[in-house]
Image 1 (cartoon, rainbow, N blue to C red):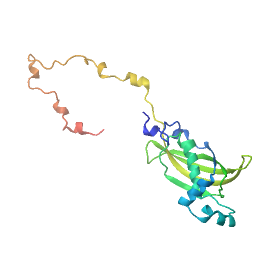
Image 2 (image 1 turned 45 degrees about the horizontal axis):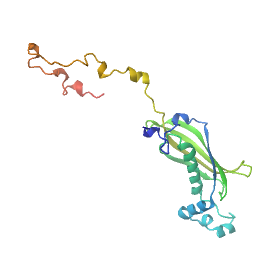
Image 3 (image 1 turned 60 degrees about the vertical axis):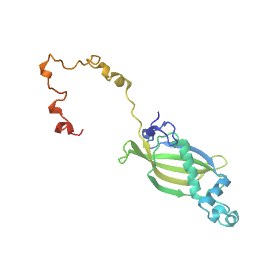
Image 4 (image 1 turned 45 degrees about the vertical axis):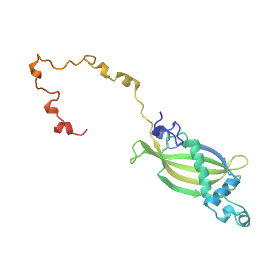
Length: 220
């Protein structure tokens, strides 16, 4: 059974851990295409400003047409981040964002290349077993030739990732003694006999090792 700290962000067995997310690593998160209906539906639900939802007013404005809500754009980033990295990595929660910038308008039909860069990594002091990874995410609009034309989003944030579990050494497990390996383990306990006067009135406990002694109560 896969333990929680060895699961990816989507619940499947993880293949990437904190130790794999080294500074300088760049992860390609694919290309997303902005869907017109989804873009407007998101704005109507969460950000119904006129330049996101009213095509007539937007057409007459300096925007020249509808533009996406910035929160829709960052949601597209988040989905790509989950699909292409967190689905493989032993991801925990995130302590938050340091920066979120919308650098250019995003419109229906735009094709956006998404990537994330690892900027730093260190073991977490607050959460043993986790490491804190500093990341920069970017989205770039692609031209007809698939070359980047313009950066439209940049975000800096941190994520917690589980350290790689330590597996037990099979050789050590085989060498570990069992009850059956102990001398006399298979011999029945005949108990004290009437012929042994030293056992008369005795108990199995050594008075010097009673549970009330300071030595027995000492914490590990």
